[in-house]
Image (cartoon, helix red, strand yellow):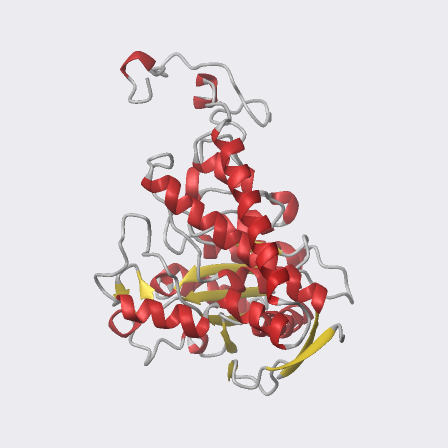
Length: 375
């Protein structure tokens, strides 16, 4: 039995202001495809668990899910190192998981437990892991992009002469693509030839507004937004296309050529957030057709089975194992501790150059737990 398979990617890329393009044929080993499958299926099951727990009121506040878009995060991560920087929007659970996280730690944060990523204080939109080059989710639409360009400046500033630079990716949705701060940041990145990647995850709807209604660019075409900045459009439902496309992008940006626009064509299965049913501005039939024809996990599963790399029964056993692992992590996260009251004023005040000042300030009113809805 062969351990590799070859894939045609000739219809997965569109180029703008570029004379070259990524490889249109690639190979993948059984181990690579299994790794992609397990990563994406874990993300999918984690997000489904979030959906269930939100509806059970164990998760409160804003909650934006990533199911349907798993190939983007997985493909990018297969190319990036920990030294490459990644900052994204509030749809950030998956990035937190694959950049050094765990299902238990992600869910603990969503449940408001002290064992969570930011000790239960950040919730769905504010994950962060500097050690693994993940500079967080951003609660303000588009506000992560200027920070991402700052990370690209840092990468160029600290680059060793004669060696490829690390890159910095700023991910945002199509609804944020026309933010003024993105245009300003792109101009600076182009002027200074920074290794900045402007990655638009185009899932076709800015909240509930379709691409056709919220941009003057015909069909969106966010990869063409730079007059002087080159761009590439990638099939964001195909993890191998994302992998090969991002290899090309990273090589271009890390070689001192300046920034690039990347448009990932994708689709989200849930609404914009958990408060959005996602069916008032698109039909259930549209969602079902996308699931049946373009699902990123089904693509990898099909690749493994049809190329004789794995049997269908083996894939089902992997799915069963991952479902159990996510369920176990959820229960353990739920059993965690509520943050102590002192966490309300830790990491708020600093003096004498210290990282934190934990003493209570006289003007802070502490919670009255007897009047709390949790009591």
